[in-house]
Amino acid sequence: MGVIDDFVSEYERQFDFWDASARMARGLLEAALASSGLRAIVTSRAKSVDRLADKLHARNREKPYTSVAQIRKDIADLAGVRVALYFPGQMDEAERVIRATLDVQQDKRFPPDRASAGSKARTPDPGMATGGESTSAGASAHLQRFSGYGARHFRALIPDSRLSAGQDRYASALVEVQVASVLMHAWSEVEHDLVYKPLEGELSSSEYALLDQLNGLVLAGEIALEQLQKAGDARVTIAATPFRNHYELAEFLRSRLSARDVDLTDATLGRVDVLFDYLAEQHSATASSVEPYLDMLERDFEHRPVAAQLADLMLSGNQSHYNAYLRAMSTSRHPSSRRRTTVSSLKDDAPQTLALGEFVTAWVLLEVLLKDLAQLDDAKLPPLPVLFRQLVTRELITPEQHAELTIMRELRNRVVHGKGADVPPERLKEAAAWLRDLTRAIERNADGD
Image (tube, rainbow, N blue to C red):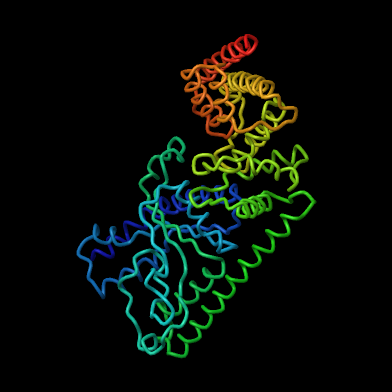
C-alpha cells in the first residue's frame, strides 16, 4: 500500500471522530450565531472517504506525497462546518462570533486582496489549501470579469472550556469553518463540482463564461440581500408593534447604534436572545421600551456586549426584574445555558441556587440604595461605574472599597449573564456578606453627611 492508501485507511477508522468533531463545532457556532441575532444556515460534515481519496490522488500528481505525516499536514478540512449567512453584510460580526466561540488557528479570505475584476482567480477547492489544481485550456481562454468565490475560511480548535467531561479528545481536532452568503455557497458548489470534477472532459471557454456570468448574478443577489437587510432594519426601527423574535431586536439594535455613530467593530451584540426573552416576559419587547437606554450605554462593547449592558440598565435595583432575567437565561436556547435536570442535579445545585439568590438579593439592595442616594425617581440607573465613582467623590466609600466593589461587579456580571456556574457557593456567600456590610457602611456614612 502507498502513503495515500495508508492515510485513507487511517481516516476511515477515525471517521466517527471527525464527524463528531464537526457536529460539535457546528452546534456551538449555530447557537452562538443565533443568540447574537445573526441569521444563518449552519451545516457540518466529515469529509467523504471517496472525495478525500480523489483529492489526494489529484494533488499527488502535481507534487507526490512521501509520507502520511506530509498528507496530514496538507489536508486540514477533514472536519468541516459551513456557515451560510442570510445577509452578507453581517460577515464581520459573524467572524467575531466565530473567534469568540472557537480557537482560530488560521484564517484566509477569498478572493485575496490582490484579486480583482479581470483576474483568473477561481473558487478554491473547499478547504484552505488551494494548490495542486491545474488550469484547463478553457479557463485560460476566458478572462474572468467578476471576483469569483467570496468567503472567509477559518481553521479552528474547540476550546477546552467548551467541552464536557469525557470530550477531551476532541480538543485536538482541527475544524475548518467556511463562511459565505447563502447565494455564494450555492454558486461555489456548482462551480467546484463542474471545474474540478468534470464527468465528460474539461469545460470549454463558453462554460467558464457562463459560470462567470452566474457569479455576477450572485454578486448582484448579495447586493439585493444587503438592501433587504436595510429595509428590514427600517421596518423594525419605526414599528410600534412588539419585536417578533430576537432577530428583529438585533436588527433594531444594529440600526439604532449605527445611527448614533457607534462602531461595533471589535464586539458583538451579545446574548440578544436572552434579552428578548426577558423583554417579552415584561411586555416590553418594543422599540419604544429599548430606545431610552441606548444613550446610556458605555462604549466598551468589546468587554461588555450591548445586550448585557442594556440588561444591566433595565434590571437596576429591582428584584423581580433580576429574577425574570435569570429565568430567561436559564431557559435560553444556547447550549451553555441548558442542562438536563435530574433529582441528583437538583440536589447538587441546591447550595449553588441558594448562594446565588443570596448574592443577587444583596446586590439588588445595594442598587436600591444607590438609586436613593442619586435621588432617582424612575427605574433607570446610570451605569454602575459612574455611581461607584460618585461614592468615592462623596467619601461614602474608600478607594480600597471602590476597587473591591469593581471586583464584585465583575462577579455579578458573570453570575447574571450565565458565566458563573463555576463560582463556588462559598465565594457567592462571602461576596453577599461583603455587599451587605458595604451597604450598611454607605448608609451610615450618608446619614452622617
